[in-house]
Length: 108
Image 1 (cartoon, rainbow, N blue to C red):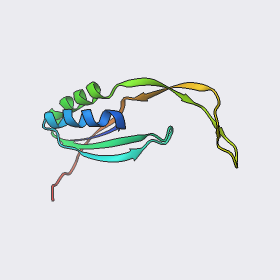
Image 2: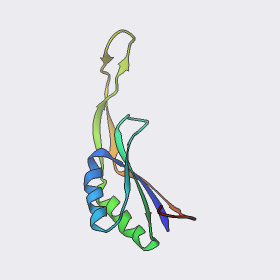
Image 3: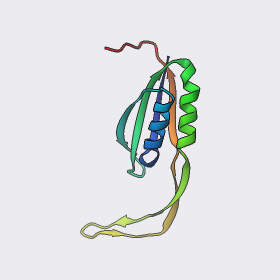
């Protein structure tokens, strides 16, 4: 058995979850927030048989595309609102995936 942990952007999570369900792959989906850009993500936890790892990874690859967004790089001054600085290109989307062996698994 393997444990797959996939951290996916909010915009990709719905389609990816549907694709996993269509493959018969069960998961737990937890709302999370990224530390760098403070963007909402979802973390998928899947404890699956070894033969389902590749179909799961295929679903993740097909439904979690990276894209470039333009974001303002602002500075904040105490007592005032944000001051807009230069615009920067930031890569968003995609997925961060961990696959690890499971030494013990029990449904209670």
